[in-house]
Structure formats: structure tokens, C-alpha cells
Image 1 (cartoon, one colour):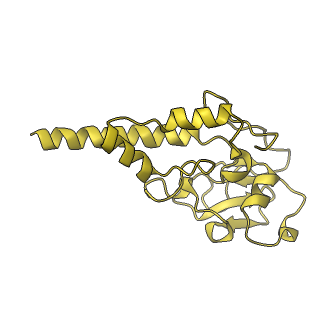
Image 2 (cartoon, rainbow, N blue to C red):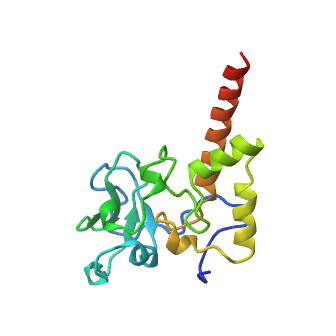
Length: 172
């Protein structure tokens, strides 16, 4: 586990630091505010030579409709998903095959399968146990640079709603 992993045992996603003066919060492609990302995360994710990185702050664009994943706060650099080692859940929230948890390799599909087979999901408890055991590295393995549990909770909630609706329609 990385020393600076900030996954709290109770989960959720957090932003850690404010933008520095003179930097842009907005993604140059979609104009939505991005999240400051640790350079270590960017280094871990990029498939390019790290010599391309500069001494500037970088931000993460969460917007699913936007092709930009990371951008420099000065607006000079943009990195798209094709520039990364991982497919980004935030860019494909409805894709069942994209990891929602990068440390323990959970996908929406695996969450839905467990729910269909057992009637419940243990994924949050499983990830929380891994966090408490010091086994997570969300700061470098998750493209958003922090804990995945906020995203995992959202996937579980959507899966429960879909599963409940499908059970009601089969019972009719």
C-alpha cells in the first residue's frame, strides 16, 4: 500500500487540496471543474514517457461525456484515455466491464452478478476490509487518485434498483 493512500475506512471520495493561484479549475475541453490530482497518480497512469510531465499542477476531469482525463492547470497539456494504462470508470459509468475498484478489481458486472446470485452485495464490506488491512493503493491505482468507495456505492445502488425492478417485472 502506498504511504499516502487516503482511503478512509468508511469510504467516499475526497478532494485533498485546493487549486493553486493562477491555475484553472475548469477542464479546457468541457469547462467543468476538475479535481486536483497528485502527480504520482498521473505518473502511474500514463503510458507515455514521464519526461512529458512538467512542474505544474494537474487536474482530473470527472465528466463522462468529455474525452479529457487529465489536464495541466495552466491549460497547456491534456491527456486522453488512450494515453492511460487503465480504462477510466468515470468516463464509462455504464460500462459493466470497466473496473470501478482498481485495487481489488471489481466491475459493475461482478457486482451485479453477486447481487443476482445471492440477493446482496458484499463488495463494500470486502473493499473496506482490504482498506483496513492496508491493501489499497487508490492514490496510484485509481485514475481519479483517491478512494473508489463513493463510485462503488453508486454502482451498488444502481444495481439494486435494476435488480429490484427486474424482480417486480418477473413477478407480474
